[in-house]
Image 1 (tube, rainbow, N blue to C red):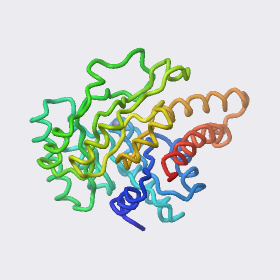
Image 2: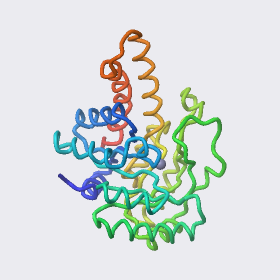
Image 3: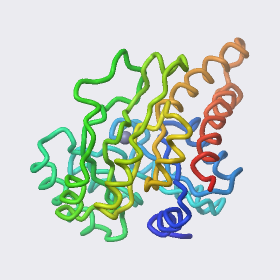
Image 4: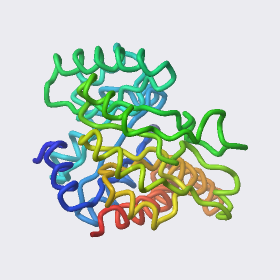
Length: 288
Ligand SMILES: [Zn+2]
């Protein structure tokens, strides 16, 4: 099985991106696995601090390991948005493939110092783990929002990216380039799409030279995705769209089977609903 670093190197050469999807239950997890297996593509799954509090850290790692061994699927586990070194170390010890250390809430200089400490702590547990750092504020909630969160919309500069990567030695950088976590009501209704600053993505890539991740991919214009990937994005995160599909799928399952009490008979409706979203995104991100 290729390492995540090798998969990202290949994707970067091919100018495609690896899809990253969050899960907190078997409905989403099975949907992501089914979509990736059907398309025969590598995939990343992520659990944020909140999500892994629900799944369990060791249990999330065991699910991924099980699928790798049973199906030979190149599936990689990411500790999404980890805000403390203690939580990062816990994930590293559990065998995660990537850890996102996110202190984008504090001042730039402090963020650099904290992230550098995190990189050293994580690599001392396992030097193979990729560490991702985040600069710029793109909001924090993967849910449906009333309005754009305060402070979102300021773009990361190539200088900040160069300085941050050189000082922290992160393997992957998540910049703010017009992206945002969560979806606005108008985006759920399909009236508005997120638009990305492609030129800035290319400038940041040239400045820092590392792999880059696009967070907050839900509701983004498809053509912007394609251009962002060509400009240097190698991982794309989609979460809120999956959560919407999860909820709608669960509701549809209940509505279709009002007298059914077996979860394994009702929940496949939700799996299908989430899988459809994952598959369409994987096809887009993986096409040359
Ligand atoms: Zn994110």
